[in-house]
Amino acid sequence: MSDELKDIALAEAYLNDALSEEEKRVVEKRRQDDPDFARLVDDMDVMMAGSKAAFRQEVQEQLQELEKTLPRIPLDEAALILNDMDIPAAEEEDDTLQSSEEDSSKNRRWLYLIALLLIILAVITWALWPQPKAHEQLFAKYFEAPPVERSNSRSPIAALQQKADAAYQTGQYAAAIPLYDQLYREYGDSLSLYYLGMAQMANGNGEAAVESLNTVAELPEDIRYRQLQFYLALAHLQEGDRKAATDLLRNLDGEAAEALRQEMEKAFSQ
Image 1 (cartoon, rainbow, N blue to C red):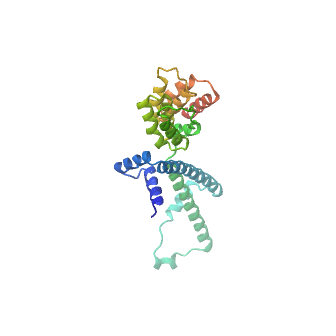
Image 2 (image 1 turned 120 degrees about the horizontal axis):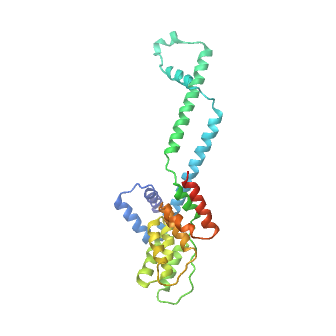
């Protein structure tokens, strides 16, 4: 097996939670150190999520079409079919033969019952298939990592900033996270802390994003990054904290904030 195929198999096992804790730590360390592998994992995550959603939709549509073509079987008739499941022994077949009309009727009823059982099995399978929760669906709909807006700098950390921004802009969020973290903790780069929160959200870690963006909001500098509170609300939503997200959205203007707030109220009132 080629190295590329091995990486694909490893990424798939990681995303399907099929690795041991030690193996997961090795994969996560490699995601930080290997931008190409990090991008592969991110791309497969998006692809697998889309495939599962498409499969569920296709199964649901096929079930609806199949249900339209099947006759309705009364419960008493279904019970009679089940009672007919006692199959005679081979040596008694000659004595138990019925007319062709009766055989045909029984065969049709058997086909209807089998089709009904298949529908029930398919519905159960579809119902048990893991589906995104409402807050995850809303987060995916409204979150899009904003582009980096940073003025050109000749400071000593300019090279590190460019490296972090390049990883972020190309979707290699796992690689960008430690770089942005270093820029803030070692050099006090507030803008890097903001993009650290964005990268953490894009990488699926809403809890860390909440911490980062809350720190940005509390900095003594008079920094007002565009839509900071909206992204903070999304980070809370990603973690399933609907109350914190709703409280932030109520104090925000803008079509996106209002639309998200209304969709949250509709989704969580059901």
